[in-house]
Length: 445
Image 1 (cartoon, rainbow, N blue to C red):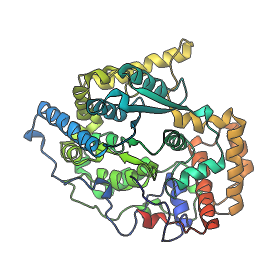
Image 2: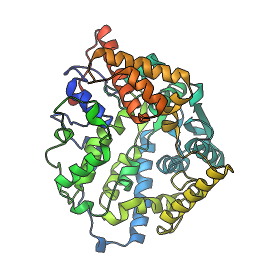
Image 3: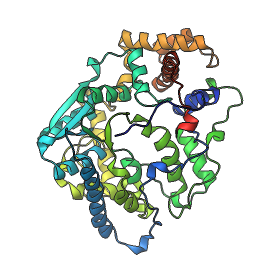
Image 4: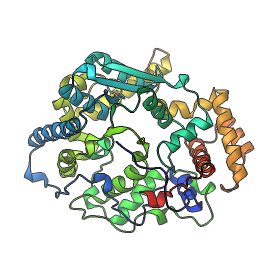
């Protein structure tokens, strides 16, 4: 059971420094002063990274299939109990690898795939195709069927933690889908599957200095207009850890920042309290294997894709969003070319009006829905008016925001972040009304 509290003793959350971070990054990256920054990798035994000459790619694939099955099997043993085994199925790779493992450990009738979004979105449609192909039940929640209310968004924050990054979007859909299915089931989360697999791994990461890793992290995560909304003198670099946590012979410096900061302070906040959640990609067999392979095999998820295709060939021949509607190609060298080819075909289809699915999934579709849904526009502007009334965001002008929304001169991401600040502050207000002291994010870990 995941019962991490979203409140308790500690400093008031979302003080000015935390608001500045939230407005700069979309989340609060600053680590708490105590505790293990790599606690998310608590099962990892920290073996040193292997040299390229020490093992062949074919041997790594065989070892990786064993590690994947061991990690997922270990979680399956721990998940024994009443209720369904629920996987939040998208069109990507991580949830599909989990689905394959579940079908190796459970009968199809014990497995429930769950998806949110809307027909026509690539993730939604591919997930439905996969669920039908393997014969499991498929629970769907369509974005248009959900009541998007301020109270509902606040509820979703309180069900997780304060501050919650981007409560408006797929995190709210996930919250509602969890509610519909119920807590008497086991939920399987692909948390860190992409990062351990190498989605953010680049050539030369193992040679990067700490300063270079920090600069790269900031370059990737800073929102373009952050200075417009933050306090004078605020410096994003001041929120970054001053030194590495372990030797780069064990974990590269860019990976240390990804796991300690992004995965812990942003991605991991999606987990709901009161639900049994299994995270197989954070199990020791997988972490010890994947984080120890040479960098070149993690780059572009080269080895990871080969492993999951080898472990579950039928599943990974089915369409994926990763490869724009086709399965994972067997030869690693063919994968980048296949992506470019499929994107070119779809671009031609869209221009000619002969078909082609939209590029984005639920998140982008929801965030841009204010363009055609008056209720969403009203939700955003009402909350931004309340935020402006607090006087905590420099120069926030709701009328200017409304004009920018009409003229499309403000990004949907920026609107989501501003809305997120107000929704989190309303969550703090609600706790104060009930006499519960919110726990500050810098102390909550």
